[in-house]
Length: 371
Image 1: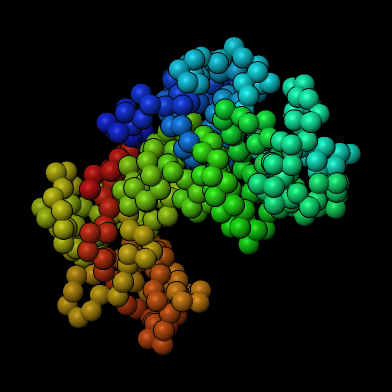
Image 2: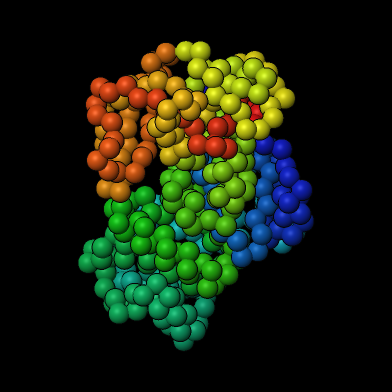
């Protein structure tokens, strides 16, 4: 895929910076010859859950660790409520941290694990007991206060980690891939609980994940990272529907790709097939056509479309996914259709069209969104 170009800042983003709880300005960090972060600008609003989403090595965990104070940036500033915190050590930032690997102390009970941060801060025993009980109640573990971690499930251990992060009443909650060690069913349950708890408490949260479904389901806004740079920041539905570039379109929701040529108000595919464009495109000539699996559908009769051969069908309950091959170019595409008796068979040739308004065009040289 072509290298993606970072999106420009919108007026809404500029307003968000002015009202931000956490603000990151031109933050950069390199390790040897690898530039992990490249002048990151980010504003997190008070009470917002903002997710840093991207593939392994994109810089999201490095950014979180810089905010936490575990890694020092090479350049740029981190501000909380307008005050620079770059020089403050981690234990002075009053941030709650939830880790991927639970990070519970095996020799301490659930209640002792949760109380650890309060004890380190010198909180009196009576207040400590009250706050621990309240935190355990929030994560529904008050009945397990005296158990030890080896008697807990993975989900329960992660709840201990969340309670320990919340009990100190942090200014900011940082969550680094907190659900990646859980099974699929428990991940869904836990992300819903985290979201409900975060909304109830109104705590500003910076959440790291590589799972786009998790990010979309839990976030007020998402920042999609690649190559140490933010490619797009917006609400999940806005990023899914209007990706800023080819990387975002492919990473969030997935895309099929075909090389094409814009000719006036039409799009010509490699086999000579012509698809009408339902919006004006200033650029003419070579482009990349991106279409999601659910936006391809059989083309009836003489409707505009292109020929593909069905390679394999995968039944997914209410939906069936087809892997098909474009007859002219050999490009392999995914198609998702409602399950039923009339679906094409393996080896069958069919014609596909694109749902109205669902064709997205990108520049070949840099992945910039064109239409």
